[in-house]
Image 1 (cartoon, helix red, strand yellow):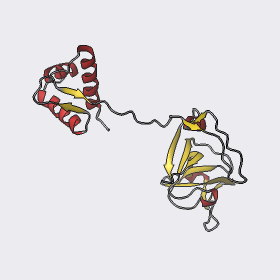
Image 2: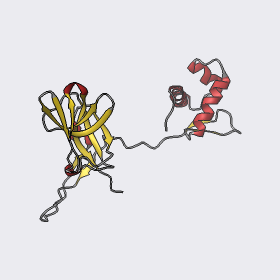
Image 3: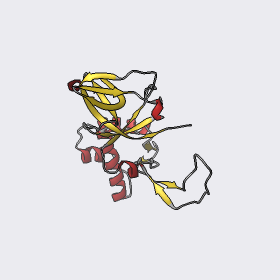
Image 4: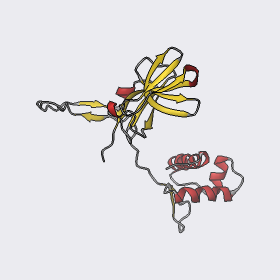
Length: 201
């Protein structure tokens, strides 16, 4: 659940105060702890956090502001069981392993972001609309790499990258589409593709 910086400070103060004292703070104690001059401001933050399901109050009990424990969200670095290999050609014996895999194994320490693909210009690379590409943030690319390129400072596109003299050729992997040619000065590399994710359900 998204919180403002001040709301996060309220939650943190409530949690630490309750842990330290064994009971929740009053509005006055929250205001003093956070350096707020107005109890109305404290009430507004508490009410907003309650509406987000992050706090609960019992109106018939004093010191009744309780932080609701949140279920931990699965992080992108969580590891998944890697149970073996599966044949996409001839069947192979299925042997379960005790290995794991995470996105960290793929991206390492590189600065990586994801983009959702729109369009079919890379379909012959088996990258189609709705897929997610993992992109390493870089402004350099080698010949033939799949890149995110910005053309004329405004048009971003996913293509294979080639230099041809003073021109850059951005080559689609779709025989029905023509390459994009642009002066090298008009093309900036935003990143290069490391991998692709596809969701089936």
